Image (cartoon, rainbow, N blue to C red; front, side, top):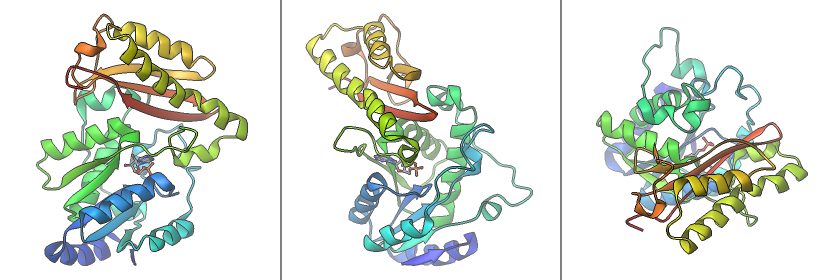
Length: 286
Ligand code: AMP
């Protein structure tokens, strides 16, 4: 496994690799868990060579967010990636990706301002910008993203489509603990009690999926109100139902079963830790 510490080193090693092999990229911020590792396993099935990037991207954190305290466990991450027989790890420093004079940024538009974007202004612009840089540096043929961050996945698909990036974006389903809690690097912030309280999020998703299957004329408003009631013990930031690939917000009076690819998104605080999750609902084509 080759650890690439600079943009130059990565460009040199990976452009040669990508010429004669298929190359899959798994972008991460490190502090790897089984969710990340499953993405790596998928990457290995898709392509001959795999590069995992580990970079806590300052551009996607707001001034009052957890950039400084975001967990970093590089040596442990390397061990895990070695055990999966990953070919390359790209681990740049911020001053190399964003040298003085760096200016260009991607505007992800309305999609980037909805849901999480409403509460994290500029977040998705920062995500799209760093991902496009990673795509350009690695010249990967595939990039794997988790559905745990479904809005991020859609933002990246939009960026790649709008800017004609030649690589293919591949989605991986959300990986969960046996309890149902979606794996996340931020779960480390949770105390034992908070971890139990956090189960309210996956439980709400499961219950509402089941409810909607039973009550086929359930409206957006009805399901949203049920979600908010069920999440009551937590400090909810939002619970919203979206339609289609661009995740536009559904009208309260719409019947969910009449919508195209309806999806339920939740963001809530458990103590000081912000958790997100989402699930598909039953729409016209499902
Ligand atoms: P992060 O390190 O949090 O930026 O995540 C890197 C990638 O791993 C993103 O594509 C995430 O969507 C994905 N990911 C994180 N947690 C999970 C999970 N529990 N299941 C599936 N993918 C995940």
